[in-house]
Image (tube, rainbow, N blue to C red; front, side):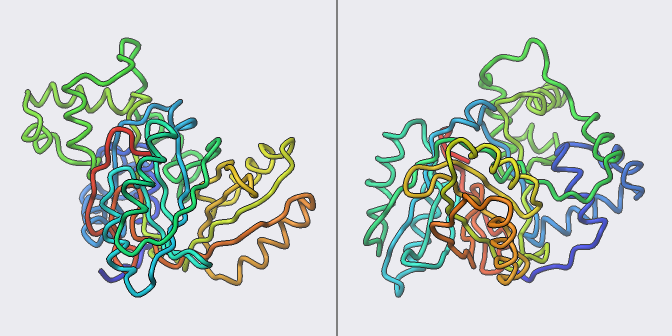
Length: 340
C-alpha cells in the first residue's frame, strides 16, 4: 500500500486511542476540537490504508514485565529470504520479524510460557524454516519498555488527562483470569480494538448489553493488553535501529530510564550475552545515529556499544504482517503464550 500523509489531527486521533482505545467519537469530539463524523472518517482512512492498526490480547501486566522473551538472530540464504520470512511470520510464538544489517538477515522476537518453550520454538520451528542456516538467541532478562507503551505525544497534557480519565477503571470484583465469555470477546477484538458491539456479538453471542459489559471489563483488566500501532514511515521515520550496549550493572536501570525519555525509543530491555541492554529506536535519518551515539557517550562514558543493527524492513509487528512500505497487510493470531 502507498504511504499516506498524516496531519496533526491524525496524530491526535492516534494518540487519543493509544490512551483509550474504545473511546467514542462523541467523547473525543470536544477534547480534539473536531466533530465526531470527521474523527470517524479519519480513523477509517488510517486503518483502511494500513497506516494504523490495533491489537488486543491476553497478557497480564506483571507477566508483561517478566514474560520469557528472546531476540533471535536468523541467518539464512539471501536468495531465499522471501520464503524464509513467509515461514517465520506465521509462527504463532513469533511476535515480530525484522530485516536487519550485519551477518544475520533477520531477527525475530519470540515469546512463550517458559525459556524451555522458547528453545523448543527456536529449534523446532525457526531453525527448520526454509533457508535458515543458523540461529542465535539473546534472552530477555527484564523489559523496561515495550512497543505497546510507546506514545505519539501529539496531545497536550490537559487533553491526555481528559481522555485517560474516561477510560474505565478496573472493577473491584474482576477475576484474575478471563472467563470463557471474556476470552471470546478478546478474540473478537484481537485485530480490531474498535470493532462495533454488534459485530462482536455476531462472533461471541449474547446480548448487546452483555457484550458491552465485557468490553468495558476488558478495558480495566490488567490481563488485557491493548495496542494502537502506526507504520513508522507514515510518521516520517526512515528506519529502525537495534542498539546493543554494555552498561555497568549498577547503572543499568538509570540508563534504561534515560532512554525512555527519548521519543524515538520503542523497546528497552536487559538481555543476556556480551551486551546487557538492547534498545530499539526509530530514526528519521540514519545520520541521526551519529548524533545519538555522541550524546550517549557524553552522558554515559562508561557505556559501550557492542553492536548496532540497522532495521530497514519490518515484516511483522505485534502479530500483524506488514507490506514492503511497512503498512499493515493482515493479522496472524498468536497463541496465549505469545510474547511482546
